[in-house]
Amino acid sequence: MVKRGRIAGSLFVRIQFSNGDRLGPGKIALLAAIERTGSIAQAARSMRMSYRRAWLLVDSTNRLFGRPVVTAATGGRAGGGAGLTPFGRRLLTRYQRLIAAAERAAAAHLRHFEAWSNDRP
Image 1: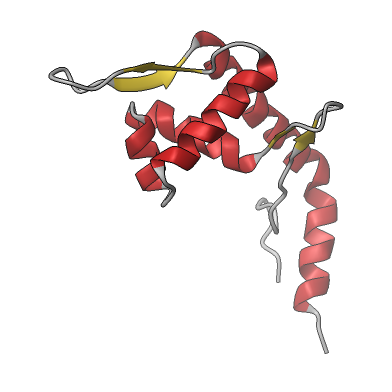
Image 2: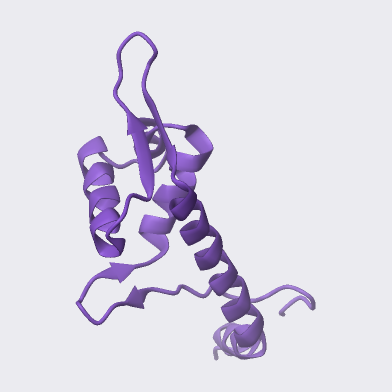
């Protein structure tokens, strides 16, 4: 049974750009983790991802938009750190708004799919 007021199922949105690049839940989750932890390394660890993989994803996102989404300070005595640039925060917020709007638009359909999946013989 599907509970009222709750969206059944999940909806994932991946944007495929005309040049073949993509932006989706993985890169967005990494950006959110960097914002939350203040560190690319800590964000990577929290996602069970290597630092190298995280850095490559950040770099590919920077290249996709032609500007930095993450600002990083090298380690050392002060410990370094990372955070989202103002553009990175706008990107994260806009994607989160896209997901929320898509979930609202798809809610009735998701409830049907969820009900059908629970109604197996």
